[in-house]
Length: 144
Image (cartoon, rainbow, N blue to C red):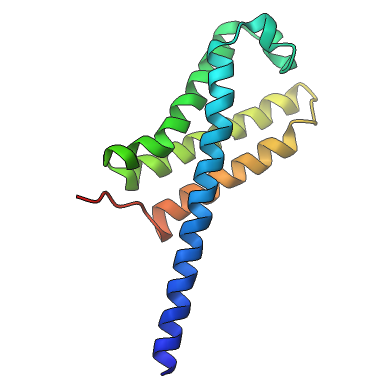
């Protein structure tokens, strides 16, 4: 009887982790999909009114960051939808976002902009959690 109870408890833990991972995944897709589109397509003069630093750096850098964020957001969902190595590509996209957030923290620290750091830390932590969970605990398997 104790074995059955332990097995049910373990199944609930795994299910809860999967829900948490999908929640993190959807949240990152939304945030980085939106910011990636903005940094890629919105005119810099308009973008710099809401994201101040974008007016202080070369526009090619803003566009590059936007494209990286957009591709990573797509990398969090397209492998699952297309059944193309989601167990590897999804966590790799999460690692890419973690690297973007670590770079952003360094960038803002050098510029002595402390305001964005908590958001960078939270988003980077969510990306790290997602990469860890999808690589080790609950990888996405393509259904054939």
